[in-house]
Image (cartoon, rainbow, N blue to C red; front, top):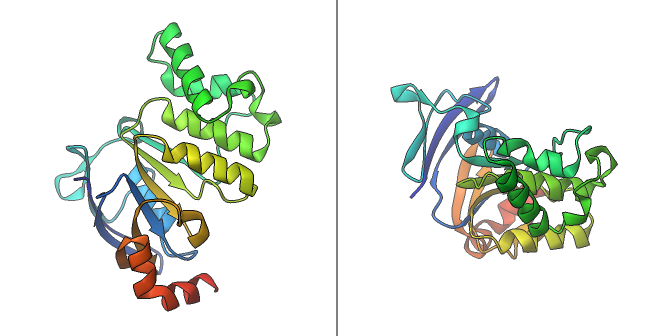
Amino acid sequence: MPEIRIRHRQGNFSLEAEFSLSSQWTVIFGPSGAGKSTLLRILAGLTAPESGYIELNGRTLLDTARAIHVPVGLRSLGFVTQQPALFPHLSARENVAFGLRHRSRSMRAHRVAEVLRLFGAELLADRPASHLSGGERQRVALARALAPEPDLLLLDEPLTGLDDASAHDILSRLLSLNLRFLYISHDIAEIWRIPAHVVFLDSGRIAAAGPLQQVLAAHRDRMLQLLSL
């Protein structure tokens, strides 16, 4: 079972988190400033923690005690944030193909078409990224993250700012995939329909972990208090 143990300090903020990815979906839930995005950046290899250990599918990605730090591009992780970082001068097709340069042209074309279709974005293939709406950019960003067939998809509030119809459609498509997800959210309504193991992060510490309904029932007042701040 994938394991994560992290200790990290940045200025006056400290993060301590230890948990396992015991479900296909793990949701990191909590208010702004709880350390959710920092945790994902450490997992992705974009931020080096003070100390930590990350193991995924039998591979050690990080072990500060043994000076192991697998580079970002070799971790077999997909990463999508609230603001998708597409190359504006490239088409949707070219953006998705960017991480598949090691594949043959025919294999690359097949995979690009496949993942664009998965997210209902096949008709956007030749459109420049700069001409896409917010929802369309997010579909292309998700297709690009999925294209290399990662072991884990890291999603940092990917539906924030989208209209309800787009958010519902994208989440439904994600739920249909046979893939392991680590999903960040601060919206109870958004994660309610996800069959996930929830890690409730509060001020850099894990306050509770377990099935969503169980965690919410046990910590409802505290969660609603924090999320109303």
